[in-house]
Amino acid sequence: MLDAYDPTNVIELGMGNEEEEPTPEVKKFIKLVKAPEKTLYEGSDISLLKVVARLTNLKYEFNLPHRAIDGIASLMKAMCPNDNEMTANFYETKRLLSGLELPHHKIHVCPNGCMLFWKDAGELKKCTVCGAERWFMRKTVRGKKIPKF
Image (cartoon, rainbow, N blue to C red; front, top):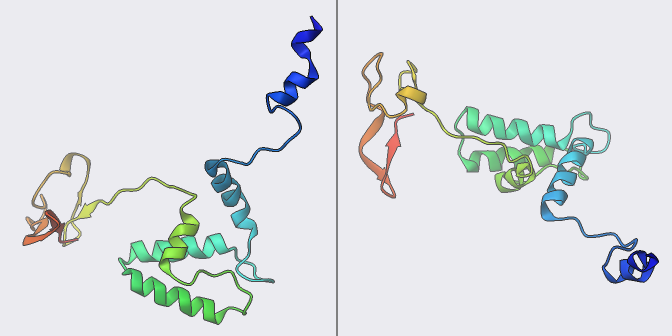
């Protein structure tokens, strides 16, 4: 009966006191949990995560190009003390937030702001309020239509 619980079998199976390397998913989660603790620079009241989240929000709220965010991020990095944690460009900002993996999708809006092309109206080609066209005529990128807004 004691043969089933032989301590040598436990060690051979790799079930000893060794620590295992965390999986990539666990590493992302740990990094995300620790991110709010990391301040922008020593003595700062604002976390790095909050700064990059707000910067990313501004990018999408005002439809700013990546180059604009690169410029803003580099300006912020230069304004902070030398030992700051601020990202230098949009790529680094996006990589830092990648652990959040929040679901998102674009919703087209009427060029005049009358309605959203969403849910039941998701397949419409014209605004039901003002009649404005949803798509630019004759403009495509890689075979896809380009929405006006």
